[in-house]
Length: 265
Image (cartoon, helix red, strand yellow):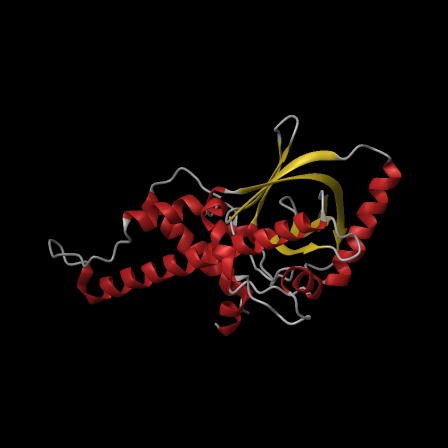
């Protein structure tokens, strides 16, 4: 459980990012105090206009050297092709990352946070943001890289992904506590017919907030590993579907519990 809590704190593990943004060396750092300023916007999804450099397969789900080598390959391939980079919009929320084409507005990819194992603002190519995630079609690990207009934007995207995970993790914790309350109330005689069921049902506000934030469509398939990003340490999360609030919360409980529990092993 300690490992689970540790993962949920979404620590920043980037010497370079820490130095450039808040000073200091390469120690693990928590999210900055003012990260909650963007929380409400984050729930709806924060948008970033970037240029898609490309993708390459990687052997491991995380690692600074691994991601740096992958980014180097992607950048070299993009330069060699001589093609104009695709302009895209990256929408980051506790559900994950949604990638769309800026011109056609066509959906390119919808990546659950549960599938993301690593994200980074690359050291050598400091205007590049990249993440590693498992393919939606198989077990391949893919590194996707994006060119930002400036270094601070690459850092901002990286930090935002960590913030998104933190929010998702907090909602998971809240929904788990609600489930524990319901289970306890049931054990204490909540199923007596005609008897007053104890008020173990989550508030409407809690249900709506949780239901809107996360969905469980992909949790069963999602692998989980501790994430380090340049870099921001996070773990993972999913999107909303048209179910009644109660169903969403129960499925959310089960899916998140399984996924986050796997991360603590």
